[in-house]
Length: 455
Ligand SMILES: [Zn+2]
Image (cartoon, rainbow, N blue to C red; front, side, top):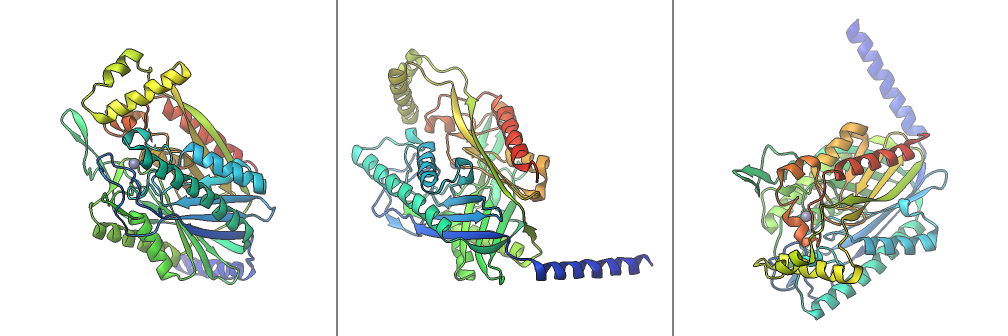
């Protein structure tokens, strides 16, 4: 009897699904656009301080891509992805201001992310104290960043100009190559594979189809440093390959990648092109598995919220301490001291806090996208998924700005690269104060409440 009841209920729900499928009409209008942002000249590459010359070749083109969504009430939002190391606040604010001026879109409705490839160009002032470059290299970077800004604006505008009826579905897959990179060895945390460390292996996927069911775009993410490669060839690394393979598999479809909170994870194994392609293959197959399985329809109103929170740093160094650091044997510490002394000269003080953007989107009742600035560690994405529901919550890092690594209280206590040494390359004295965790989580909660009100 019990078995028969179960059979009936399965049949009934299958009928409900097929009826729903017939009457579903496109609730949204979606536009997609993509443009190449590969540097046209040899340029200094970002992410590693040890490089001693600019790029030598182009292994794979880099792209910036925009997915614009409009709901039935005319609310619009744009998700921008880029194969770059990271955004700066100057760049994303400028892109957003230009887009807002042309379209009336509020800042909160423009979400910009980066893939964090370490085989792309230096972007603006990102990681400013990692490089000690001659004037002509900085000129190249300035000119590249200027062009990048124009391309980001035009790709967003073109996605907004091409809105067509579409359906959205979301799902969640998994890929296993992200490896925690904080290994506890005597007296320190070493940057080495830690198979039992915290990691987020989720692969969030959003599928966009036209009313006839033809695929149009795939937005997906993964929480892992995009650092399989470390050489002198421009390349999107595993994220670039995952997008390339998906587009090959689905001609005419635009695949867009965003980085999650993988600041404490590296791809494993690394280093080398073969591994970048292997991880790209694994990630694209994880996306395929989601696309081929049952996905959850997305429906309802788009609500967006954005703010900047000030994150506190420990007490700033004195002028004397910085002058002493100018003699340090580590050239990156000398670079940072020089930069902070210039700041002191110009502003009369060194800031003991730094802004970090927080953005939250709610699409209908059941879909929440949290996007944080900075290199955010996996604790945050696990926390927000636990808090708001694992299946309905996406968490992006590297969003809108990359002021530094964003550790939790746990990591601040433990120490290691993500807490201490990385601050040198970001030109901040640091480390952060433990209060950054409650400040960020409370702000995410506040914004999440704002976008979920009314469902
Ligand atoms: Zn990084």
